[in-house]
Image 1: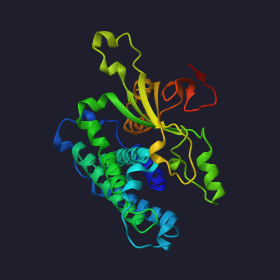
Image 2: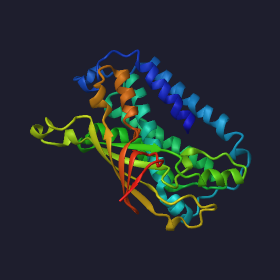
Image 3: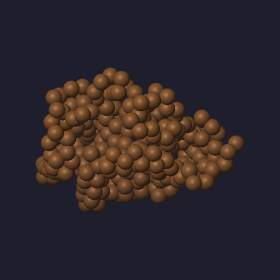
Image 4: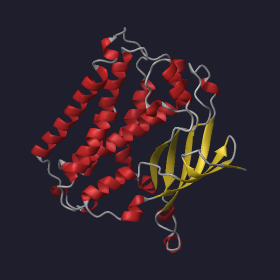
Length: 310
């Protein structure tokens, strides 16, 4: 998955620098949206190359050379693993890849609805393929992982066509505050992957609200346009080897200030708008308050290195 993400990120930003500076939002006539076969072929080839990279780099010599009979992930595990924070992770990954694919399909000449629709479909197919692979692994096919990732693939469609979604961004932050996950994997001779490290406040998901856009125009004049407010959640308790107590792990909830990079940089060209759109999916360090389970102030969350108890 990370190879495909990196490939599509590079591809979307690189090719979009060759676009004119006309924003997709400023195009008025449907006639201005015309599929460019050569560009569509480049997009399709890049996606195929991404799949091939994933297979040969991650799967061919990984789980697929230790094939087990196909099975679905047991319901308890599928519904309780990592207290379901992994489902948010699948949604976030799907939403980022879906946005990158939307940029690519835009470049190929699709209209806004078609580009977001095909981006969602592509992500859904990708998620199903990955889960199908998992069905032959010790993990099993997770129905809810597939659902979460597929829904994330249609996030870009919601951002374009649901007015309320213009006021909020789904973001992600990670910092290794707790070493439990890594310590356990080292004991077992495994490497571990940072996006599977859900525990000990290491991984936080955020809804970032663009307050300036939500205020009445009169009040908005006095509020900094770049200053957003974010609500976050992640697993508070550290990793326990074997993870037998998934349903006992507590969530931590956060309130933080945030930055709207669109308001800071005001991008004009398509490549810069694409770049800022990706930056606006990352929750950068900022002062935050943990509201639950114990109130704490972090001057530079997600880093736990310095905090103040209430």
